Image 1 (cartoon, rainbow, N blue to C red):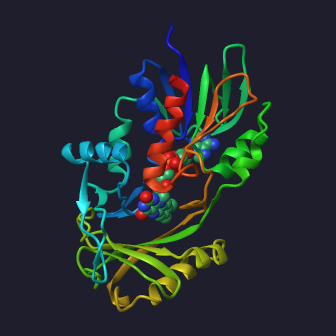
Image 2: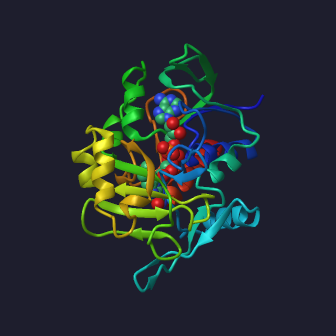
Image 3: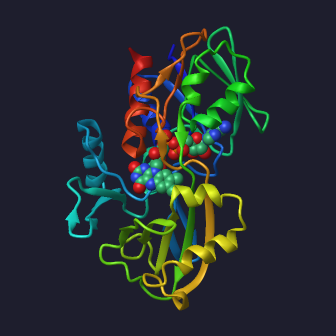
Length: 318
Ligand SMILES: Cc1cc2nc3c(=O)[nH]c(=O)nc-3n(C[C@H](O)[C@H](O)[C@H](O)COP(=O)(O)OP(=O)(O)OC[C@H]3O[C@@H](n4cnc5c(N)ncnc54)[C@H](O)[C@@H]3O)c2cc1C
């Protein structure tokens, strides 16, 4: 009989883990609380405009991730974005999804058994493994479990679970930066130089992307990320006020009369700024294999999420 695994989270780490397990003849079900897949590799529409409002791009340093990236570029799922900073061209090419970052997880999700709108609230042990309970009142059982939610959300699940899990301090050591994001639909193209992405070192904004120049929006639109200090200080402020304040700081790049409308999104967890050193954490105390993975482990960011998910799955197969 095939071994089975529940994966919590349909972000890049969860999807990567699923492919690795299925390749090795495991049965996998992925549960995600979101309406769609991809987690923080998110692309949103507002009318005709399209925005990458979470992750903006990634680079590849490891051979494994380079092979994965090469494959999705060949399949026209991703492409290179020749981003520059001042006079400096990055030494590693920047990669983006062909129709936005979410194109990549959507491609990986094809053919997988994924239940969306399923928020996991607790985990318990069974005779053959574990049982997961969701907010909707559904139950799922498997022999093993990989949890890829950001560490604070993982801790929330564990606190409601009746498990002999003793490594909570390792999860508590993982921290994320918040990020407030403004998505603006525009009348004209921004003044951001080609190819449409700019990191800012002063003021309250860390990054602006021109999604039209980036090639993911058919009409003019921009994504603006507030820096972590501002995002933390203003996380619970009125969204319209925050949007106005941030847009008023960058009228040289986006003139005020170009802004048609905007939305603001709050990311409580964006980049994992303090991570667990290893690529994943396996419980030593539960009776069933329980593994924690995601971008809070190893090198972080999108490449780290990929490596973590893959390594977590491989540790089950061995
Ligand atoms: C604003 C922002 C900008 C970023 N910029 C970059 C960038 O430019 N380059 C880069 O490399 N990285 C960037 N990142 C980070 C990058 O997006 C993440 O490192 C990566 O996507 C993490 O993937 P993951 O699978 O580990 O986690 P996630 O993508 O967060 O996936 C976890 C999933 O778990 C689900 N979940 C949570 N709780 C539950 C629950 N109780 N039950 C069921 N499901 C649950 C969530 O819905 C989510 O889909 C950025 C992130 C943000 C937010």
